[in-house]
Image 1 (tube, rainbow, N blue to C red):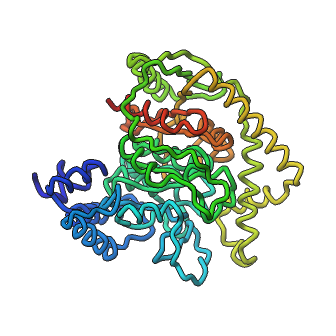
Image 2: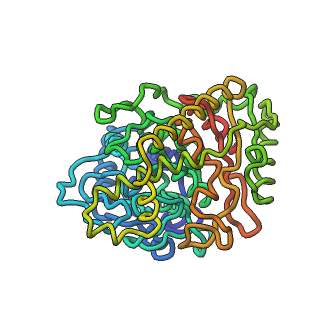
Image 3: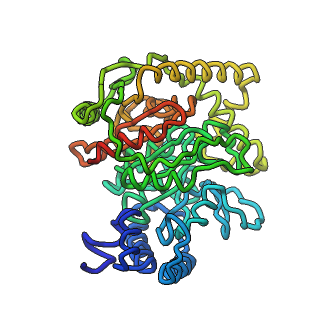
Length: 461
């Protein structure tokens, strides 16, 4: 092996499972891996700006404790010694959670982990730092007055996506193989697709949410990783009910054991454009179609079919904008004027909605959930592009010259499945002529997270 901090055999480039296998063979230690990841992070952070905070001293102390446990033959759990990062919307004991905002986070004490973070700690994961996000996670790209612009590892002039953009950029760049993100309208899948990694929005309630999101049950916690096996491993660790989340469910059977079962016999609906509603860039359409052809070659029954629903963006905006209004309402009046203009604008619009408007949006959501549940009586999986485009210029909410009004205009394949609470996974399936990644989205019925991961694993094979 060459120097473990640089070059093609750097420990920073290994997946979590590869690290765990190396630890088991005594090829290297968690301290070696964490040092390599810290060096990689220091190298890429000035260019990508994926982290709002890195705690090297604490990470090395955790790695040393993990190394000692492994030498004693007493690993703590499934991720003992694996470096992870956490989006700065999720509390990690020992530091403030800033949520991408310059608003004062409060006096502390900062001594509580979010449930998913607590699961990582129970399994011995090493916390590298908190990743960047836009202010309160309100949009599909990652820039803020707090931390500046987060950039794409494949081309720093392009956006990493958002709102879990720091997590996706960190995983893609080798600044820890695993990260936790949150997804309220695509915020795990959008940046994962732009950065060429996997991002999963699990079934709502599989991963407990605490503190509760102002966006309610639109918001999910999900893993970002470099392959399906790591994504499944991280999901298995963070799944399970927690007393602090009344909406968490008990459908948490491990998904890792069934990864290799393949797609033979699965019924797959391929919807290239939601029935012509979405204009998809030709390079994206071609890459997704080629991947769908591979699924058919692996034994899946594939047919072109659409879920046949009208774009629910108006109802989504009602739910999303009222959530933004709730965030802003909690801030001191003098702080509201300092909010990002786009966030302030949608919050003002959200505050004008009535209770009847909100209930009407819930009716649309319920009807959409019913339609998709019925759809999955016929099809095990729905395949779409994750996004109709590849990454655009960094620092902008919208592609230049698009004529769109809000980030939802270029994310039509993602937010509908936040409304239906289904599992949805993006997997990289190639790149455009500029080398920018293209993502394919796999969607399954609620509680069938195993199916999207099985299909992703099959595509990787």
